Image 1 (cartoon, one colour):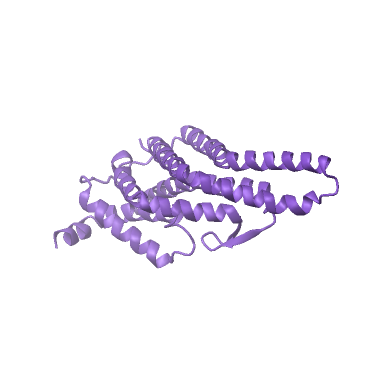
Image 2 (spheres, helix red, strand yellow):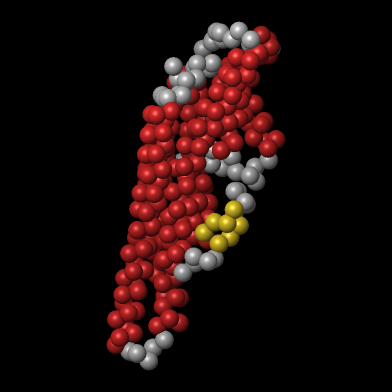
Length: 260
């Protein structure tokens, strides 16, 4: 009953925590996907806010009127959206890698509907993304996410949000550039093997002009690409671990520029 009494006595503070949690769960990978019901997101944000409220240090809000409180609510919701956006940018490297792999394997026109985002995504990109989410859950990534939520209250005290737009833009720009670099690194082994396959087929077509290289080359590139992907799977865990660590470091760096 103590926590209920505390919630009623500090209802304004709880609402601010709740909107921050809700903003995070709207965009964060897995929890923020469109196939997750909105009621579940709201409920998850509500219970996460209760846990954070019960474990955080007492905060004295200095709000004079309803208009100032509304501005603080918008600022807290924006903090959650920025954190969720940063995590989503990191996971976008997976779709980028899948897009590059699909173009190289000849699957450039074979896009499928992703029920998570309700958009057309590359075939291999969707496979790698689902694999990444599974590894994310197996590596207790959701625990890391909730830990990050709790620490966000310590780094960015409730009601003391101040956006350093210049520094934030630099961090986000670096995250986007790192996304392209990581996506290219993931796809490089398959790109190299398929390029070598193309060179081999080109030499064969010069040596044996009667051979229809086009009919043989497409299945050969697909088999080589899938075989290379299977070889990469043990190393993929290390790549995902690097992705998660980089994402956490960038998000914590970003949060430092959202407080006074």
